[in-house]
Structure formats: structure tokens, C-alpha cells
Image (tube, rainbow, N blue to C red):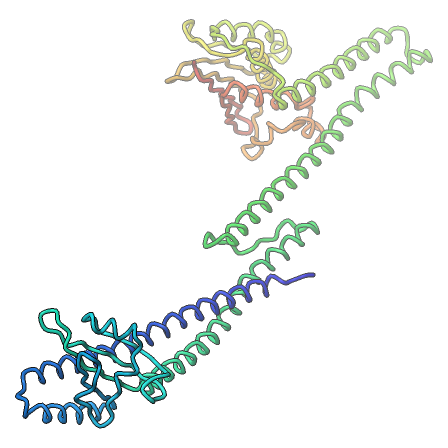
Length: 470
């Protein structure tokens, strides 16, 4: 059976309030009733003590006057009294005085022992509907000589208690009505907040990850809303990452297909020409060389992609050591001097012999070869400067050329995979695979270093690598 949360909240609030009010009302009514009867008993005791004191001090002939005075005073207050001796016989009784014989033996024994007897409400004795009565003993030197019995009808006290209970009932009803409305209102608020979370959850389950709910740190529901929003943000980030990965996958497949199409077409064409003797004898060697170059180009493409994926998936381990930077730069100069001379470029090395760099030797060579080859590729009749220096706790390596440069708006794009392939599609003569600089960036990050590029179209490019010294 389904029991809505609204009714659970509402009835729980109401039941708690009802129980609390009933308990408080019963306790309050009992307290007030006892208080009224205690006040009445105290009043009777004070009159009884006054009567005993005045009769003791009065002359025998004045006793009747004292009795009459108290009779009139007590009658005005609807009270009565009687005087009795040590045997329980009455000897002074006002017009409506009660009889001492109405006391039980136990009560009489208590009085004879000098104790004041107090009965706050009695509905069976003294010929009345109900009375409050007290019996005060009169003793001297520990000897019992009698006492005084005072009574007061409880009708006045009962009426006062009834009036009090009536107003208490009205208060309870008003409080119940207010609490009913308040419980209904608060339950509606809580249910509404939960309903919004439920609706938002339904939208998420339907694929809408842009939904938000009002949140706060006021209570657990607000914290739940915070967690929900955090969850949606995480899902959004994951979906964007998945979309980005899917786009990259499509782009990768398109780029690889584009890069492989040209060498494969060339290889296929040359092989078909050789197979069908369509290539003249004097051009066969040139065709075979072309097939060899295109095959090596495909191998480089595959190797660079494998290298790039290994770096991205943290499958490459670095073996850092202290290396003389001048030696590394001279190795780069020696390896690429012939390639530079083909474009009439000159490679210049500037570094002090004492400058050391903490890096993986093979990967540092790979980084600098990729950057330097990139500079040679985009420079003609110019200079490529390999420079190294120390600065604070860093070793700074700069590769600067006087080539065609890069538009500042495009600098961030050079780290993108196959960015050069994009340039090649615009019919420019530059670029091959566009993986070199992507690999460079990943390798520098693996060294916990930083790489920066400054360039201006037509005025050259400068790559700056910063590696921390251990």
C-alpha cells in the first residue's frame, strides 16, 4: 500500500503536537488543581491558628464574642469551624459547625499526636457535596487538649478549576488548528522540494544533463540537492569528454586515412607500373626509390602514432640523469646539419659548458630533433639558433628560427594532433604528419616542464622549454 510522503510528514507532525499538548495540558491542570486546594488548605490553617490563639488569649467571658466574630468572617467566606476537647466532644460550635465524629480513627490518632490533618477534597463527609477540611490540634507542653476543625466547600474551587479547564481546552483547540495549518504548510514545502528533485532525476534519466535544482546547506534535502547538482555537473563533464573523445576518434581516423592515402596511392601506382612494364627502364630506379620513401613515410606515421598513444597513456618511463646541455645541442646540430644545408640554413649553438639539465637523454634528443626539424622545415636561407642558459632553479632551452613564423592566433593549435596535416590540405608545401609537436608537448609535460612558443608571421618562431633542476 502506497502512503504518500506528504501524509507521513503531516500526520507525524500532528500526532507529535497532539501528544505533547495533551501531556502538557494534563500536567498543567493537575498542577493548578493541587495549587488551588493547597491555597484553600493554607487559608483554613491560618484561620484555625488565629482562632486558637485568640481564644487562648481571651477571657472566659469574651470567648463567645471571639467565636461570633470568626463565625461571621468565616461565614462570609463560606467556611465553618468547630472546637472539640481531648475526648472529641464539641464545646464551641458556630451555626454550621461540623461534627468531629466524622473523622476516622486513623485521622483522630494523627490529630491526638499533635499533627495537623489536611484533606483537600472529600465528597462523603460533613453532610455536604464536598469539602476541604483541616483539623488543628491544641497542645501545651506536649499534651493534647483538643483542637479546631475548619471546613470549606469545594464547589468554589471546582468551579474555578472547571473554568480553567474550559479555557485550557479552548487554547488546545486553537493551538491544534494553528499547528494543523503549520504542519500542512511545512509538509507541502518538504514534499515540493523532494518533488523537484524527483522531476530533475527523471529529466536526467531521459538524457537532459543541463537540469539544475535549487540547493542550500540549510538541511539534508538542501545538501542532497547540492550533491545532485554536483552529480549532473560530473555527468556533463563526462559527456563532453566522451563527445570530445568521439570527435577526436573521428578526426584521427580521417587524418590517418588522409595521410595514408597519398603514400599508398603512390606505392600502388608505381607497383602497378612496374608490374605492367608501363614505366620506362630509365625511370624504374626512381620509382623504386619513391616506393621506398613512401613506405618509410608510412612507417614513421605508424611509429609516431604509437609513440603518441604510449605517452598519453603513461606507458613511457623516464630515466632522468644530469646531462651536459652543450653536448646535447651539438648532437642535434650534427644530426640535422645536412637537412639544414638542403634549405641553405645554418644551425648555431649557444650554451656554456657548465650548464647541466636533468632529463631523459633519449627523450630530450627526441624533443629537440622534432622542434629543430620543424624550424628547418619552415625556414629557407635562414638561421636556426639552439640556445641554453640557467635561470634560478631552471634550465632554459630555446630553439629560434628566422622562418615564415606563425600567426599568433594559430599558436595554440600547433600542439593539436595532425595540425600540420590540416595545413597541408590548404595546398601549402609545409607539413607532413603534424604529430611531432604533439609528442614534444607530452614529453615536456612528462618531465614536469613547460614549453612556450612566441612567433610572428614572416619574422620567425621561438620555442622555449623550461626544465626544473633536481
